[in-house]
Length: 430
Image (cartoon, rainbow, N blue to C red; front, side, top):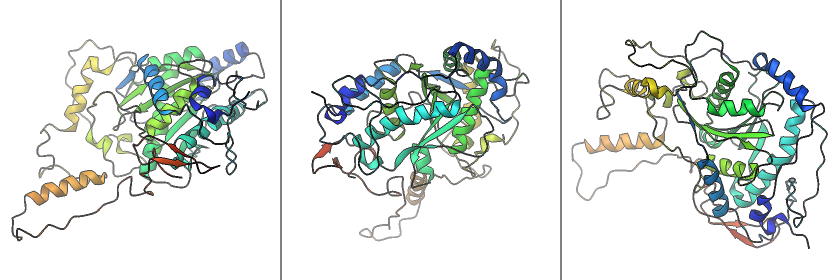
């Protein structure tokens, strides 16, 4: 007896392993050619990047993914068809024999465009269907090709997990950038080296190494789109990362192979998309990061002010033994202290003194907090029973429809599926 994937999503995903990528030519020959051309195929602009720390998440990441899948992915029948009859979304990654998922055949990959076809048709199509079943309010969120008209690299392609019907800073913050290079360039060894980098050198005169150029490319792409969450893949290998709010620290997962289990690539993809959308139990920045205030609040959101430093700092003679290489954490040279000093040397009690240039916060909540502090200093001239008029402002919730409902409507019947409460997108009625 065969079952639909929607009869047990958790059971289906347990054995939903990506099919092995078929290459047109011998893998060894393609990897050798890719190694020789890696440095010249990735163009990285010269600009100011202050990526001082890259934090490796080690095996704890696997536990986070597995726990989230077990808690949030349904393991009961949802009374849904595997294919959405309105959108055509369906399951394309085959699982164990008890699940009836038709086999999808694709031609062997001879270039990056063919590799991207495999990405689009297998993991992206399936994860998108699962996500829309679990969180119906995200039905407008899809994987689309990201074309910023600034990339002249034939071997570096980008996708964007985003709301295709809205373009707003709050949407950008919840989106995910997916960067892809073919496996003959982004080899298994190179992918591992990428995750082990400790910082991105700034101001160096030597040419950047391949893994440094790749970090620079990802940083540029995410900053340009104001999207902190990212995924790097060659289809055969996957790494999941995010940048801190001020773009000075990155967090990167261990490499997950396309054929790995517990977690699978499908598990990790679901977890990372949910984390970006602030789903309950999703990944959050594990440590507080001291960052320059002008990295967080910028007048030009499309091109943050960190691209061009506002001033040159006088650096005293270093007493540390740090060699200045990117394989060592910047904290060994006291970089964290330097960043904190750049924020303010006056403390936080009086952030807007007469000699400090005031910048209005872009976060409405911060503006509201400033108003409340101002109100408390006003002389009490009103009657005791007269209330001060309250202000209303738009937040990321009110900018979009209110979906704070804890049930999801089936697209094929009147059955409803309970989903956990959390961010407005994570618990909603279709």
